[in-house]
Length: 140
Image (cartoon, rainbow, N blue to C red; front, side, top):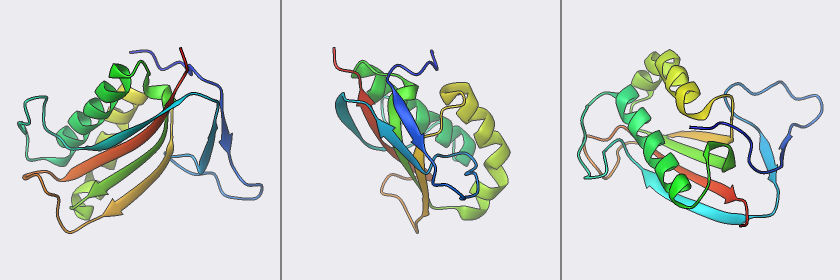
């Protein structure tokens, strides 16, 4: 999977702000087609969960997001915004190192504008995390 930046975009970082870790404060994207990706959980293409644990579910959810982006003709670097909804804050904090390895494997050093929101539950059980995203796909 290529991690090249396929579109021109600019990371927006206000002067004087501390550097964000693992995300960008803002991304100014070049013209293209906007792709809105629905929340993706840690199940496979047949809607089967293969693990009750956060890290494997995160990896599958991220792969699902990327599958939708790729189906639209884009790649990881085209993702401009991502929101994570997690219902286990303790598991998230304990898994941060593993999640970073997973992130780099699939996203390289590309960090969209991101939010992490902790919620009481997700619709699809035993889901622990859900990822939604917005990408700007270069026009053909």
